[in-house]
Image (tube, rainbow, N blue to C red; front, side, top):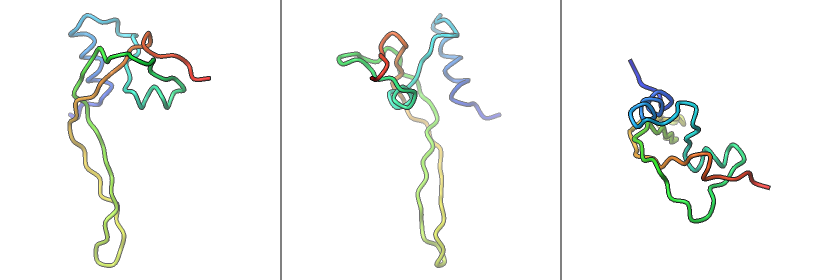
Length: 86
């Protein structure tokens, strides 16, 4: 069975004694939610997650989209390290 990033993060929280409702997101995920990481903050958590990429290739005169997934160690930030963007 495939493991999702959400399950990986929940397992990380359980293994490290963190509250399960503690929001942990990557820098880009916080930005997408309207927050920014405060200047000078260092990530408190490094977790290996799945990353998906896509690229377009031309094959037999047709343009196709090819995707792949791989593991990447990501920096996660807590809610106390971010602030709402104005």
